Image 1 (tube, rainbow, N blue to C red):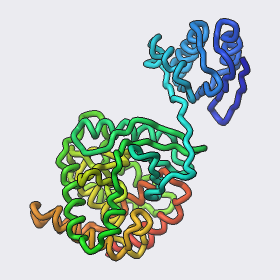
Image 2 (image 1 turned 90 degrees about the vertical axis):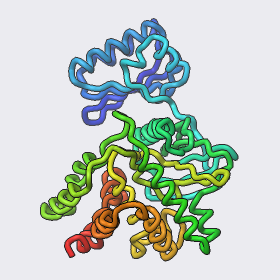
Image 3 (image 1 turned 30 degrees about the vertical axis):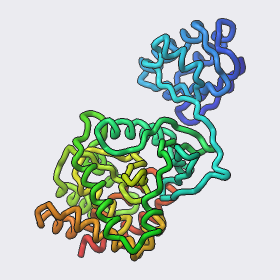
Image 4 (image 1 turned 45 degrees about the vertical axis):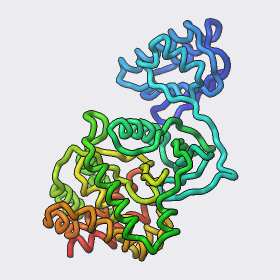
Length: 379
């Protein structure tokens, strides 16, 4: 077995090539004994066999890392090794990240693009959402897990059953069964915006009527207390305090919030809407999703409707107005008034969140929050 060691700050990565068995396990043990490290990563991309001797070395390393307050991760693990880890119970003790199936985008039908990634049709029955460069692979794994939890909770989402790689990018595969992108349906039928707005409002109401499963989805309001504080690299303390104060005016709630619910994250299958892109599903108040709709369709000067859905910005405004009229039709007038009075703040939330995980858009989105939305909040 060949073992290549790479150190970066407090992380040691050992790339294993060959069989990890009784003959080669001592070599791994010697590498592991070279010194304490905060984070240990073992890359199994070129190792597809582990014997009991190798498992003992892995277990010894895990105990040492845990005892020292560190972490250990097995990455790029093939199916054969995963089966061994499952059979012996080590998969429940050591963090394991499977080796991803590689796909190529050449020749695939392009469906849509947003700030986080792009969607393509793999075949008649499946689509893939490919995250942009810089988005951590763990986000794709989270989306897959959240999609399953949302499906069980009763939200009409497609089944997400695979995480794949496209070069250095990560993607999530959804079963779609010949569905059409809702944005494309709307673009081909702009004369019937009112009808499409009713569909969007119905989907949004359905999500918000679903109780969030206990212990599955994060509390979105609590998450934003942290996100807003991270904006101090471009906002002064008084603006941070303003945003935090506005956040506290949003009521607490325990229902599902999608937080990226727009027409390019909805597919139409046999006339029925199916929601995709479940990585941001949270527990909280519906106003977070209303804010997302403001972000996508209610800021024509930023062109986000055209970017995210390819629906012309002016038509996006029409869609938003008609959707909100239907969404709030059976709610007290004070709730619609509160949403409208806080439109700029609610619209800022998606931009603030995106700044936290897409550094390459940080400057552009920071300017939108600072120069466009915050003046409206103060006014």
